[in-house]
Amino acid sequence: MAVVDVSEELKSLSSTMGSIEAVLDLDKMRTDIAVLEEQAAAPSLWDDPDNAQKVTSQLSYLQGQLRRTEELRGRIDDLEVLFELAEAEDDADARAEAEAELTSVRKALDEMEVRTLLSGEYDAREALVNIRAEAGGVDAADFAEQLQRMYLRWAERHGYKTEVYDTSYAEEAGIKSSTFAVQIPYAYGTLSVEQGTHRLVRISPFDNQGRRQTSFAGVEVLPVVEQTDHVEIDESELRIDVYRSSGPGGQGVNTTDSAVRLTHIPTGIVVSCQNERSQIQNKATAMNVLQAKLLERRRQEDQAKMDALKGDGGNSWGNQMRSYVLHPYQMVKDLRTGHEVGNPQAVLDGEIDGFLEAGIRWRKQQEK
Image (cartoon, rainbow, N blue to C red; front, side):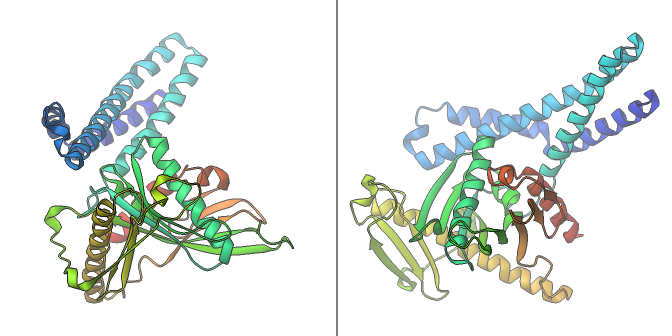
């Protein structure tokens, strides 16, 4: 790479980094961190466990974001020195090392730039993810469980806290549905591009004739409700059922009628929670999930009105959004963005950042 080209590229990278730093507002981030550190150090912090969890989660996220931003700025500044040394010494190995670092920095900058695109009303919220098996019988139930594992592994890779609220197991294999929370700021903005129908094509392990099977699973992503949302639910419009939690193993959670199912009669929305031993705790969690679903329903109704005014019929998102093909070839492809990967197993093991980034950029383009 010519010295002039490198100089221009480094200027471009530095300029992009400056724009990202301005959007992230590092001074405000440092102030917010100082406030949260003071709250986290208070002896009474854990008197309110829910608030304590929120404080520590936000603090951890902001500290990580600031550290990554400062480190990337340092790497960009160091690149100029690396190239100057390589040219001064006419060292091919040093030049190759500098070019490899330039490629790495460019990739990291692209990833960080995606974060600045999350500016929607609820994008900064934590997320509730609901996965359900659709058409395809036992294969669909197995696929739904694979998707649950994919998202939980993705969160684990990034060190994000998750909590599974409810899992309904299918009779033969897999799950009928699952609801879990990803408890990190901007989880909703990041994961909301995953909403839609996912399709799996493979030789069915449940077909003794070894035939190819196509199965489907649906993913719903909701923002966690906050006190400012004013989602009111009349208790008279609820049907509340309690039952014994189900699942593999013989956990203590299964020995009492602690699981709670709420049915919101006007809308027909049903939510369940069985992850706590206490019926009261499960009901409170189920109410939070129900509020999130009602909030999303209201948001979709508002969006439909806007789409009708704009004349696009509300079809810009579509429903089927990604295909996972294991046979006759190996590929995972996003049907909206065109982003594809030739290693389905890596994707199902949680390597989905490329799809998330492409989806976020695609969504931003749709808004223009």
